[in-house]
Image 1 (tube, rainbow, N blue to C red):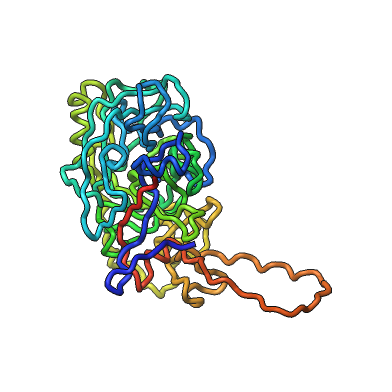
Image 2 (spheres, rainbow, N blue to C red):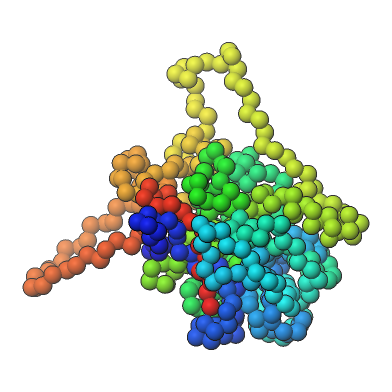
Length: 434
């Protein structure tokens, strides 16, 4: 699978990113083709009836407690009366967003409401009206695809407890976070599946790069207020949060940001990649809206996450420390050893090996067999333990026939390889799913 590339003057300038808007759950793909709404579902995710802080967002979709007949998006409750989502879920935007031309948002959609229900497809209570919408001052889509919805009434803690938006620490601070997250949203499970409107939880997704990070930097073309993640989200998940994996498992969910856009495989069978608008890059905006929505913290107590804490300053080396070749143990685990955070590893890269477990890794080039040491192979641009060799096949009798066997052209170019390919420049293009 690979992302579709668009040539620009002979140079691969942008990635065609699809499915990052809102879907219409009651419509077939053919009917949705005429709605003009955008869409981005948890691919292969499991139904989640407990994470009620992950809410559904409906725009232009009928009366308050009716099923959503309009566009379906996702969001997260960050305060009792504030929901974070993607701005394109509530404001008009182009069907295709090419960040190289710096597009802007259009007018506001109507009848915006949110629900804590597991599904959005039946007439039921559990819906909350949106009284106002706050957006960043910058109307350019790329890097600013975030909106805060102020509800007409607070959602009781007995129904849903707010999560923490990641504004207190820098997203790439290795002392605080692992570079893995879980998506929870109301989108479809595969391109054109037509099953949006049910809350689902993904398997762990890797953070692939973060602008400004010393350990996981992005190409210069990635907007500084965004980060790039792996596969797992689809149409209808727009606005859903990227929940740091460890904190979510501990029952203290924290979000890195809101989903803006993603891509599809060439054959249209898989949703691929994800681009998120970062909370830490919009700290001042989030705090300003939070203070206003809480009536200067009189409606409920000010949460601890409003206090910014910069990364710890590295301690200077002890002048009397032994030299590097004195036989002392290196700081951090080696390649393939179990880890919990980036700082645990010599390479400063702690990654999901593919089954939800974490091990120390390092960047590599999938086009070069020698970019990883013996016993490791390059997958998704990371050195991971090589899969065991298959057992030799049982002896069989073969019959030779005339004809030719053709090996299909490789389509295994991963999202991460596409991003870091030397011949490509990452763009931020969003194709709206109809």
